[in-house]
Amino acid sequence: MKMLIIEDDKLLAESIRDYLEENFSVDIAYNGEEGLYEAEKDIYDIILLDIMMPEMNGYEVLENLREQGIETPVIMITAKDGLNDKIRGLKKGADDYIVKPFFREELLARVEAVLRRSGRISDIATIKYKDLTLERKTKRVFLKEKEIFLQGKQYDLLEYLISNKDTILTKEQIFDRIWGFDSETMVSVVEVYVSNLRKALKNHDYILPIRTVRGLGYMFSVEDDVNEEKED
Image 1 (tube, one colour):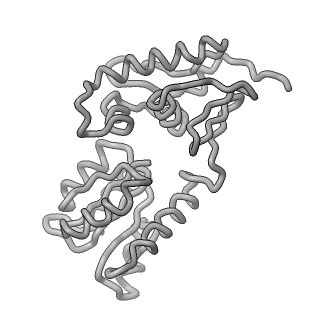
Image 2 (cartoon, rainbow, N blue to C red):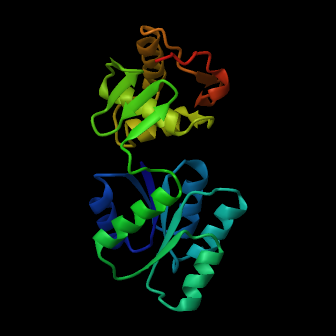
């Protein structure tokens, strides 16, 4: 899952990243304007947002996001512990509010709770789409009861696409999520992996409904699904 931290305290932001990066792919923006730009151009599962920042404060960032229809869950992280500050943040669309200083374990618990409420993660460690079942922990894929063997990044690609059904994902977004910003691999590898993923499922008489959106990227399109669900 992908997280954006918008926090002008560099040491705190990097400390949070170091603690959470085992479970999340984490990006950091060190001011409000940069954070708003990152949140607009990429798809994140959750945003951690400081209030007191130069150029654009957290309230303004949050207000801009919600006005644009960006409903990514937001947890506000701040030293402002007054009741009115909390109410203001929640009214502007924040999903939760945590006051500095805080224990890292509490932050992780709040992140997981917000993601559960938003439906972005589940206590059940599987993803199901019709006859396909993906086991997240083991990265195993089943078509009905038959296991389909995929390479690690093929599995990651399939999970990312299915988790964002009917959403256009650019090649750059896919590349950043699966391979990461620091990878020496080229973005063109996305095309290769999409092709290989299609072939892997086609070998089992299953047509993945991955639509190529010319000039943009790919979409796992439920509308394009031509597979008939198999009877037990």
